[in-house]
Image 1: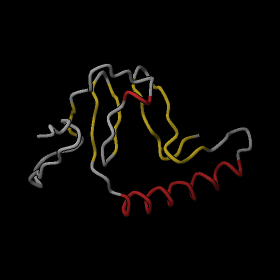
Image 2: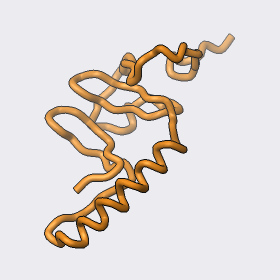
Image 3: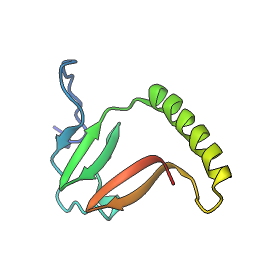
Length: 104
């Protein structure tokens, strides 16, 4: 019998669960090394020493990110000394690994 990895098995949760949910990092996890992050259907962030999971929410997220990028893009065009980045640009902020939808 094949044993599933704890990251392969998905369980249902009640709507009352608050996200993000903390995950146990896999053995050998290093926040700075992408290859050590678990492969899950959803979004992960590493914040304050905790690996956090959010379920996929592509439809709502794409609408919101589009609005943010349009707004920031117009601002950056008026402030040429800044650069706009999008597409979940990875960054380290105070020891946390984050994936911003948009950043200046």
